[in-house]
Length: 58
Image (cartoon, rainbow, N blue to C red):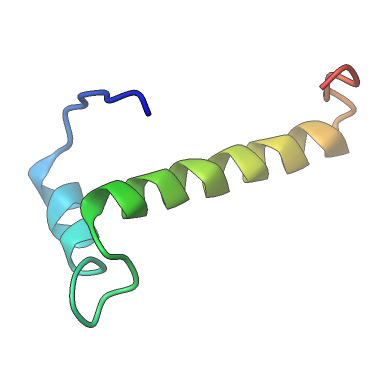
């Protein structure tokens, strides 16, 4: 798995941390970020499909 580095505003990181760890929805920050990326990409695909912009060769 490839590692990347990103800069994240402190406010966003604080928000994220509320959902991570014991009692949170995610085990760690990486899981939370991967889930967010997947959900965002799925939403973008749905928008593209509604506007007939999906590449049929996928």
